[in-house]
Image 1 (tube, rainbow, N blue to C red):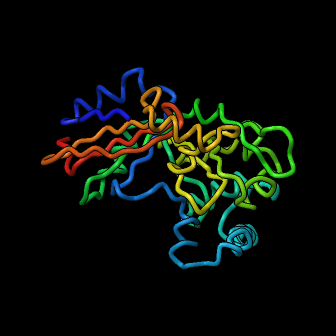
Image 2 (tube, rainbow, N blue to C red):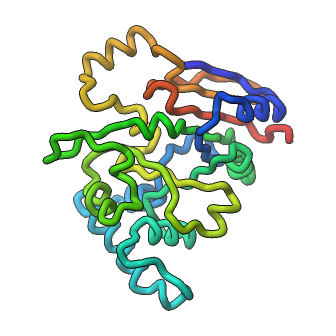
Length: 260
């Protein structure tokens, strides 16, 4: 892990505007301690819903929204376009498994610092690393690629996500983007399971890598900068540790205010 201290807004600009974070997506959070849980994960965990009922609850929330949306909206998505429905629900504040990310580190910084009263965070995810991942699903001999898991494909939401069986992450936007997504240069990160935050899913070993190999790698240290932490604290700088897919995850942590 590499720790890069950031002690000014100009330093932050220099870091995120350089080639290092091209093709990364960013998410700002007002507290650096918050994990990357989706709104439906937070809802299910906070209300202590039995995990055995999570799929049913998620499907029920979507079903109710679909049945009543036409009463309030002039246009609604096709019934089979789950991604479009989830994005619409996200836009109106309903709990979904979508996490809002943005291609702009500055949009993410705004949301991180807008109402922050504690050290805030800008999470960064290297999407090309996510796109290369392959996943093993029960009953399937071949590994499934990120392209094959995409939520734009009809039936994929029910086929790969609702079961909450396999930890993976996909990214993207629905075919029709709403005004908020466009204005914020938005994209979505969508986890395949609800009981783990995205940062834990990204850190999981690839299929075919056994635990012994992972432990050995940890003892030797990361081959590259596995998890990067960019941090700024007014009074102290602390190092947070972690392991992960090579170069896939970063956390930019900022004290409040950042000196804009």
